[in-house]
Image 1 (tube, rainbow, N blue to C red):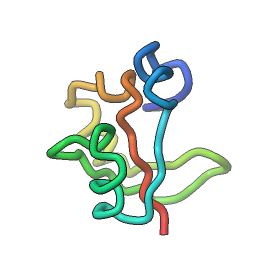
Image 2: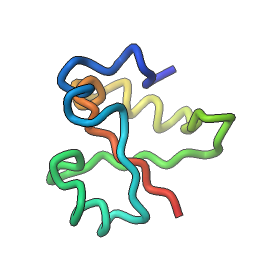
Image 3: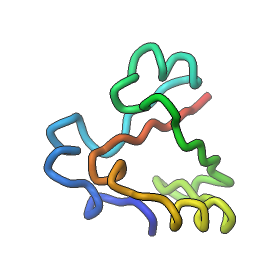
Length: 81
């Protein structure tokens, strides 16, 4: 598990929870700029498994090399069409 309720810090809970949702990146930029940031790291889910989003091994490796404080801050936007 890369991200779940235990990863969310106090600042993330105050900022509105674990994730926000948008239809596409343009909509996310317009409505959720504070969560999205200027240079978002885009990771595509390969499938949904229940309420979990599953990412590829390659994307998991990319995330493993990143500073993941954005996860604790709840700066996650899920794009769903």
